[in-house]
Image 1: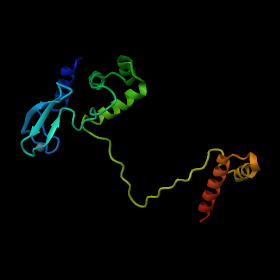
Image 2: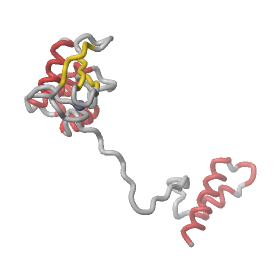
Image 3: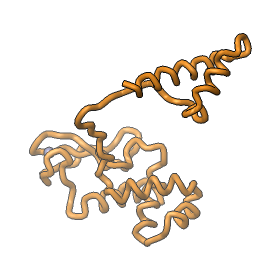
Image 4: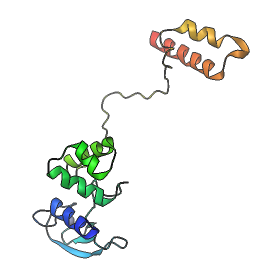
Length: 170
Ligand SMILES: [Zn+2]
């Protein structure tokens, strides 16, 4: 599958009823040349809102580390109801990479990952408890107090633990 076919596939998939402006959703769109580095990537201008966009603007395919051809083939195989494992085999990719791609594509070509929204009271804290130290203050204190042998990491961990436990008493 060459670049020309890839972009044709994307257009067909994204705009089955003709190109629409991603900003204002009108169809009064004219072609406006092609991308400087990708000659098959069509650019457009919206006559209604003067917005400019191209085949990939706002899609999960734009600016991704996988080449467009891989995304398009993934989309194509999904249409054939191939499993993630089969797609991974066909594309020579890691199963988890394919899983991420198909999840994104299932949300839609244009859908973006929802932004994280924080509500209510939000606290940010840099304190962490080293695994294995939690619930064992005596062991940590002993290690921290063993003089020259105690590493700075252990002392820091002990300090962190004390700070955390003090806080939990409040
Ligand atoms: Zn527009």
